[in-house]
Image (cartoon, rainbow, N blue to C red; front, side, top):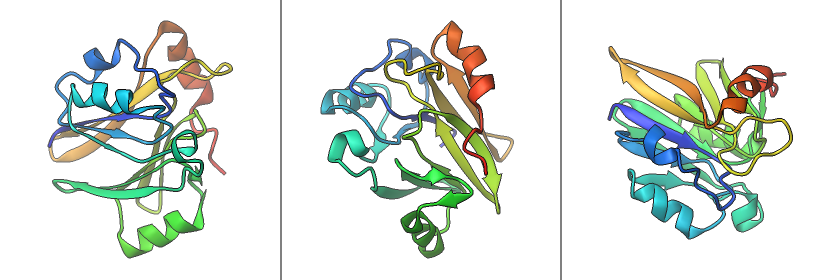
Length: 171
């Protein structure tokens, strides 16, 4: 496993660029607010998908899924809400089964921060534009034995929006 695509808050829309951006990934992680089974079916056409339901999908957004990809331990959830003050169920899950990275959605804000050795990553929203937030996805890639992560803007306007909105969930 070398490349993992990260997506969230599609709200029933799969941007036409997703297949191109995620071409060659080994797996896709969807952090909720999927907006319908057709989204997962489309993403499965690119790579296998692991997902959690968001508040748009099941009304709560509190699902948690743990997954391991080689040496990378991932905790996937929708509502965190903040990396410095995660929901008690996320804290309990991390205590029970430690993770290297927590992937979350819900806020539509891009985030990439490491706290106490755990990376907290929100790819922002890949669905319809909301306010002045970016439309983007994320990528995890193993290079020279180390996992790196970054955001990928889905349109020109989102390049600057990623810079302006990055890590606004920090305490």
